[in-house]
Length: 361
Ligand SMILES: *Cc1c(COP(=O)(O)O)cnc(C)c1O
Image 1 (cartoon, rainbow, N blue to C red):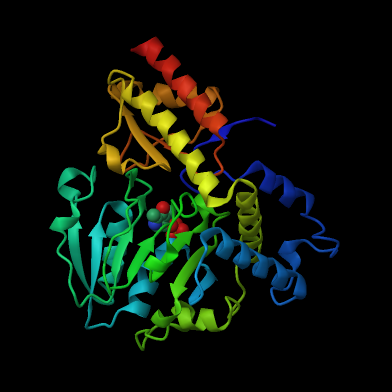
Image 2: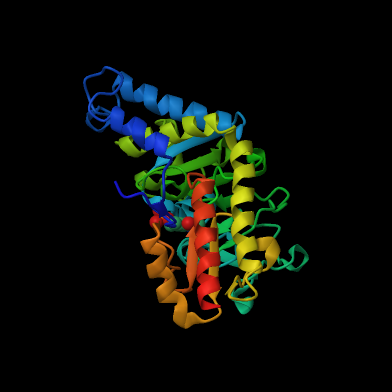
């Protein structure tokens, strides 16, 4: 088998141990004689799988009582309509912090269902920074405040948790979920598509404070109503059973890695290695993001000499370093270094970058 380090932004690398377990259990899960893919979602085997996945997630994030964990479908993109439909009245207003591509899409969709107040935007700085908190124009009557903790495409991360007082805080945590410790009690709702840091695509994890349920706008489709999914323990209809199983294996794997705390320390180290290589390259490589907001998950960088970018990518690939091309809207390079990217992968990339700069600098 070809050994590569996969820096894809999503669907992304999964822990090798998880894939090996899935392979060993593929045909016969724990002596059941069935593959997880073949099981009834209401059978006792799968009920055990989903129950364990939820308990492990609760343990990892220390999710307080009073919060529901939902295993949904439709990707994080579906949350862009579900959140306003469920949490905001049609004649109300929501606050949104605009930090780039994904927060803009959240705004665009929310506008179909309620009014949107963009509290601040760094569009004029090409999303290289986050506007200072004291410039934010928040509304006291906002139904909620939405932000994106990690802009996967731009490579910008906002790791502080905004203090919104009594206004419920909603976060699209798709690409830094489980990468660092967070205090769940500060949030009204957190959502994350699985394919970045949780498991395969097809699953979205939602953590929602129970008092926010039951407020959906009257026209909300049944399938888009959090209350419906909460009441049915994510079993209103057939959930994404196999992705939930793999996510459960990832949660167990995280527990063997020192939990979120252990993971966060490793993520700091990995991002540190990469940004150090960029910053010490005498401008051969550069990051356009203000240092405090550089993402520890998606390291976006460019070459001073853009002509070399194609060659960089093709030689990286020859060295087993794949999926480094930046998003088409940003260009350049993007190294996604989620939890499952081993530090050896980052070291291999740094080694390659130094070599490439030496040859072409
Ligand atoms: C990937 C991503 C999305 C979209 O996820 P889908 O599952 O493709 O809908 C939304 N927000 C962020 C921050 C993402 O990284």
